[in-house]
Amino acid sequence: MAHAAGLHYARHAVINRHINPLLLLLLNPTVPSAPSTQIHRPIFSSGGRPAMMQATTAAAAAQLLTDTRRRPRCSRARLGATRLSWPGRFPVQAFAGQCQSSAATVTHRFSAISQATSPRRNTRRQCSDDQSALQAGCSEVNRDQHGYDVNRFEEISQDVSKKLCAFYQFCRPHTIFGTIIGITSVSLLPMKSLDDFTATVLKGYLEALAAALCMNIYVVGLNQLYDIQIDKINKPGLPLAAGEFSVATGVFLVVTFLIMSFSIGIRSGSVPLMCALVVSFLLGSAYSIEAPLLRWKRHALLAASCILFVRAILVQLAFFAHMQQHVLARPLAATKSLVFATLFMCCFSAVIALFKDIPDVDGDRDFGIQSLSVRLGPQRVYQLCIGILLTAYGAATVVGASSTNLIQKIITVFGHGLLALTLWQRSRHFEVENQARVTSFYMFIWKLFYAEYFLIPFVQ
Image 1: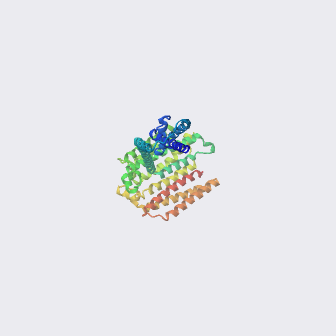
Image 2 (image 1 turned 90 degrees about the vertical axis):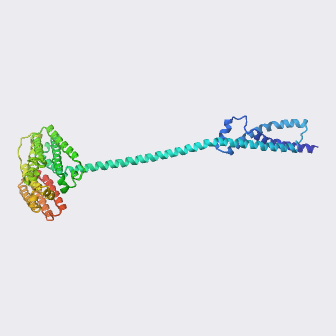
Image 3 (image 1 turned 180 degrees about the vertical axis):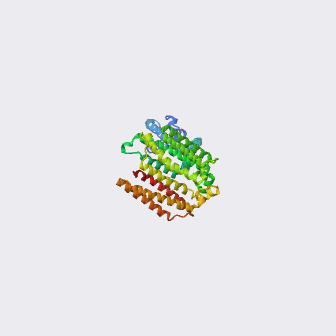
């Protein structure tokens, strides 16, 4: 009897310990003591069935712990007063059926909740994909914009570079260098000591140089405007002949630099400088402009006279007077170096005026320009130019040897002798039929012209 009662108690304990918690779990999946937000949030934030089961199991375990603490006292109390009995076979089968029904209900609820939350996850995933695509598109647009800006900057840089190169050629740089070196050399002739190099002298020199450069650009630019068709044959690389500058651009540049030249001259208040600018303007215009009694470049003598007068006489006398009389405020008096510079540059300017027509003989002949090269032929004009230069160098050597200063004597004699020797060596390889060599030799004459201005201040 005691053995049967103990077996019955053990069965009842098994039911209380294992079956009752399952029934509580299946029939009441949501624990009332815990707020729904605390249970549902971890379930759906973790995104699956394991989280839900863990939360529900935890709640059931808490409930089981409470029941377990209470039931043993109740069981002990009933154990002595009431006889426990096993319910039998059929109630257990009914209990199993209820468990299966409750499990199916819980599964249905979980499926419904999962389907309800699935659109949210799809929507978040789609938003994330759209945001990634938008960021990729913005990055692509930024790269395209950056590439466009870089390409645009390169195009602008190349266009500016081309325009500057065209303007450089428009100014005829060999004449610009000649003007700079010539005016600098002549401006040094009135200087007697280092005390003469003051800020006032520098200002006067820069005024004269700026005005002369602007007038130089006006003269060469005007000549290009009236020689576009000729330059297409003789000098196709010039900007107007090549089409890099329009005629309107050429006119704008010519007028602008003419106004600048006269503005600087007027502001300086120097009479010699203004005389030099006016004479250069008149002779440069008469040399190029196509009008009655003008276009002096058609006639060899008049063309040579224009270049000789400006380069040999006007530059030497006018700018010397500007520095001596206007800047230094000294009485005008001719010096040995001034006379030598004027006479020597007369020979050099005549050579430049004659030799420049040798490369242009074809175009001049087609357009009726009767230069000396067209009349006498390039070979004879070339020989005449070489003879004039060698004679001038011989005379300069004699003048240098007569100097009383030993250092000046050595520099002038040795310098002119070296230039004459270089000219002779170079002339032996000259070919009139080779256009490239003719142009190269013409630029070589300009280099001799520059070098002479370095020697002139030593002739005292």
